[in-house]
Length: 77
Image (cartoon, rainbow, N blue to C red; front, side):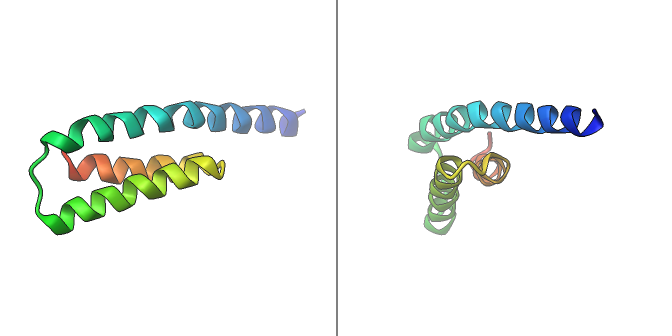
């Protein structure tokens, strides 16, 4: 029974992250045109955003949220 509960919780958390990824990507996309960063930092943000999207598509939502969170931190979100 404990295994079933653990599985249900794991799936639930994964689906929460799955729905969070697109919102995080939209927030980054909305902020990028107005943010002032050095070229190297801007490149890093764009790489992290792309990595987050790719990980989301692969179903790796925890990793996606981590990459998107790092990008958000760099642009002040």
